[in-house]
Image (cartoon, rainbow, N blue to C red; front, top):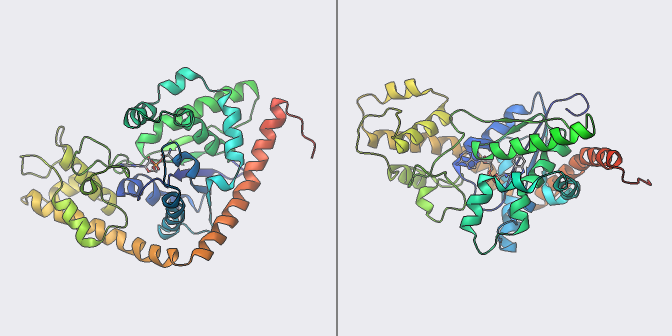
Length: 333
Ligand code: TYM
């Protein structure tokens, strides 16, 4: 809660081309908070450098991610859209929170374990303390809700633990946030290995549908999606590929599982895969059209970055200053 208004906060890393997992798990849902909540949506470039980035790619993707926020329907008059590194309070609060976060609890984070296995040559301290920076992002804005996919639930939970720990020592310091996780879009799986999360860093481009893929590519990727030897479109344990396609179809159309099973009763997997590809392509087309228009005006994007950072800094500064005061830091302004 900030100034008597509920707050929504979320972020996406500019570490690769965004996928329909990012879209259905997070981005698509951000705009639904704009009316009732004060919303902050951030491009988290500081999180992205926990794995090695090519500087030119990181710079380009930061613009692209912000353009996608706007293209996905986030009105900059109703939402504060900005880049994490433009608001220095994120890194400053992260340092303070580091001093209230235990080594043991960070060691239990599954994403840290996964990423350290994947980047065994670069298990840096930032990768380890990544959830603390994420907690700082969230707590700086006195956030009530954090719309994310299920892979981020554990990180929001540790953020809650950190907030509660500090609130016990320094009462009323932080709002304790809740994760908000969509039912069908919470974990979109790889089309090639449907037991694995669809990820922007996957090297197999056929396993991943990108938000900016063209129609033919989208339909082709869905046509090739790995399923099983059954032929009936129904949601069931062990049918990971079909379950994933049902979730995707449901997220794009709003239909529930029973409606989808009825719709494809008597039809084979082939028809279903094409239908999923088509609803996906249809839904993404307006986002893509807007995206290319927005991206072509770099000065306008930079003006947006500046405006967003100013708005965010105003709130971030107030929280950081409150924290510093409570901790006993001397303030001489
Ligand atoms: P990131 O960049 O990996 O993903 C951005 C958002 O997309 C969701 N997501 C998915 N949802 C469903 N299915 C998938 N296959 C899928 N892949 C990704 C993620 O859950 C996320 O919501 N640590 C965060 C970024 C972050 C953040 C924050 C989020 C930094 N600070 C503060 C919320 C609040 C991350 O790496 O997301």
